[in-house]
Image (cartoon, rainbow, N blue to C red; front, side, top):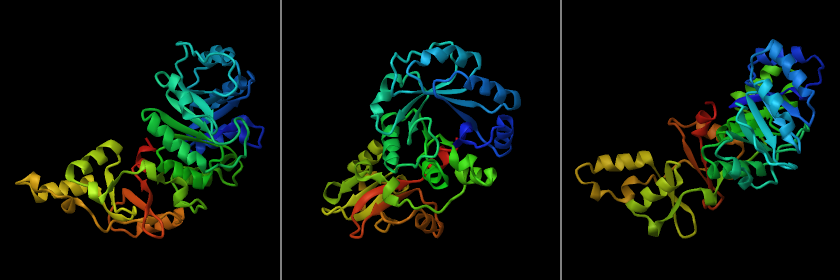
Length: 335
């Protein structure tokens, strides 16, 4: 996951020194909030004079058209436009070659992105007040991110607001492409340590599994009575997650079936594929995690295993399925 360092969150007035320090510690982008103030382009010129790191510009203005010429002149690499408060159509001219994004707040429905889906490259989900540093991340945004990725699977997701070390770990797991970090990164005693925490480190967290899991309606499920080989294949194909869960009438977990389990079942009956049964491909003792487990407990569970963990059914105290976790995005989010 790329880290976009929010320049204006720093308490220092020496812009060139801030930029050099961030470059030394591996910042991927420099995030600039333009609160309807053309003077920020003077700062961008200063940044350009000492660094080649891409600019991640956030235009917060009811009339963004007044900035189109400056965006083109400065060849800004990433530009997002705040959706709320617009008083004109957001019709970005073709001369702007930037990667374009639409910034939306937590309260705005994801469908607002639909008219821009063909041209815009990413969405910037604002998890705190746009342009204001130091906010706290609301866990409801985990749901918003999951829903957006389902609605617009080809669109990259950027996140801004309240991103610290523990939020960053979860966002990496969710496949978020870039996160803006302000106060946590810029006011840390060690920018280098903070950057490592944001990018790669596994950290303690007060968030619980149920705060960021795929919820029940997003999890592939099959009831025991409806499960035949065709139904299993259909469930896995429709959800595109590589697994489905088998449950009883009370929604208690009976087993998990993955693509690998299906391959093993086919190999077992390679002389007669019609002989494959659901029993042949069901893992009746899958690794599971309780919905009340912390991120730290989840990581400890995974590390104790002798095999790679790609999926985890999430259950409650009665072993009823409440959701699921997938981990393939820890890799995808780094690309």
